[in-house]
Length: 284
Image 1 (tube, rainbow, N blue to C red):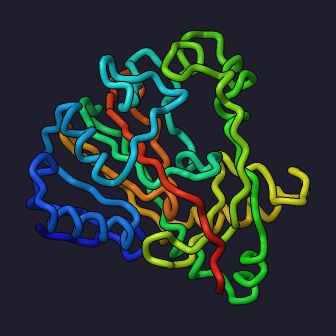
Image 2 (spheres, helix red, strand yellow):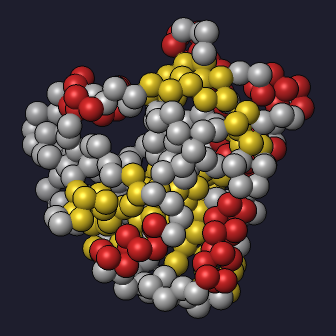
């Protein structure tokens, strides 16, 4: 197994492994690498749905997604799809999966079936490196704070009625079940990574609503400052997909952003998300 690091902030590319045939020692190396690097990228994999599920289950219990359309016969796998005539993609904004849950997801594993001839890359940001780059005084302030995350504004009834043209994920059936979007959760703004103990900035533009005890309007300036900082290119990596590629990321320590720059082409992937646990505030 060969590990290369295309960015010092986030991500590692792993070659020389077949994810369908991992012995325990190789799996442990991959598991350690996920905690250390935040996102892992594999090429030339051939995963049947059963293989994808079996690999994910080695990391923990699978979260059956409330909102995404499932793969037929495999409810553990969510479809990430954009057809040539659809205008909006899924995941087209910086976020981390399931931060609105009381026990946010550990990791997500995305497998590519159909990729456009150009475009459709995914950006990843490393929130440990972003936190490390802050001043000591700013870090101390953030360590004592908590933030509220929610699914309601993204997956709830109001979001589901935004589009009516049949071309966006809400009106064309790719995302549904808006009445299940009732999740609100408060988490520390700076967490200790459950596996490595490293300090992580844990807010994201997709699901974080406000700081605990603050209003949404009061929270916006500081949240936007943190978002702008974490979006700096030095904390990012860009992954170019090919059929058979697998990307997996640690939802506690990264953001991701699926680029929507391939209009007129199909992009189809399978995603599994693995359950996590409660998050602990960093001690400093």
